[in-house]
Image (cartoon, rainbow, N blue to C red; front, side, top):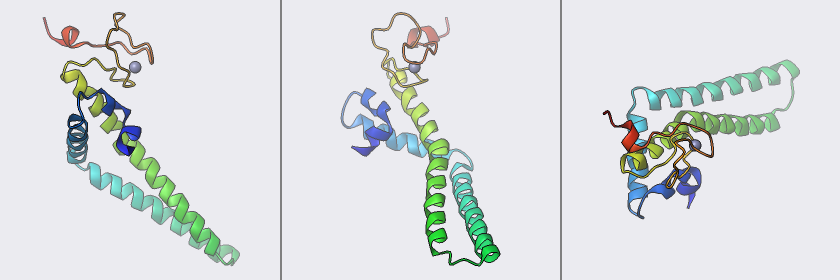
Length: 140
Ligand SMILES: [Zn+2]
């Protein structure tokens, strides 16, 4: 399933219904952040326009048949769009998906998503982040 490949954090959810529900909740939360969707669309559009201008400039300057250049720039613009989506959407979604199991009492590293059940060291063995268990994070 693609979502669990993109978001391995979904494995931490206790059942089949909880994971897709959590993913929808997370997506809605991330997209609701003010200006987030608009910023993303703007960045992708800006990258596409920039690449188109460079291609037009190259075609005009060197007077070449730029069909291959147009195809290449389309692929490049798509790649940049995917990269922007990766940084602007996927990472915040992953962070949010790691916090949800922690809130349900399932210890998961918020730094890398490692399952910390049975961990007693207080530190994630995968990434070394200091672990805040639900007991430790409660104010005393
Ligand atoms: Zn970790």
